[in-house]
Length: 126
Image 1: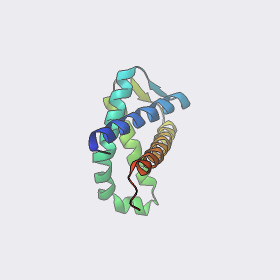
Image 2: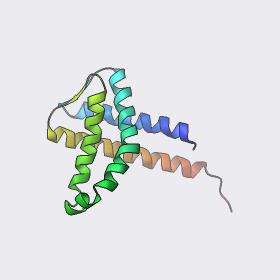
Image 3: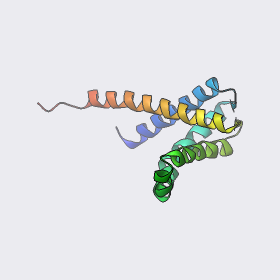
Image 4: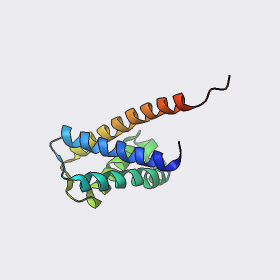
């Protein structure tokens, strides 16, 4: 799959993840399509660009804290999306943690489904 369709699919998966977090947690308030579209775009770009950079720069902290600092990086990515997107707010640390878990789960499921589709679409060399 080429870059553009993959980007659109990732954007859609992040939008679904934010919708699920909004449906599950009372502390997440996302109102309007603009909030979903901008929030999912920011989340996708932040996860593709900033998160790998921050992970490499803070690798010793991630190792020392046995991965807890990686959770904080994920929370920072969601907080950045919340800060930039209009009509998007998250209240409380545990709501951030829950939102990160929902985003992770929805992205994992989406990656599994896309992986199955890509494997089936490849020609077999027998």
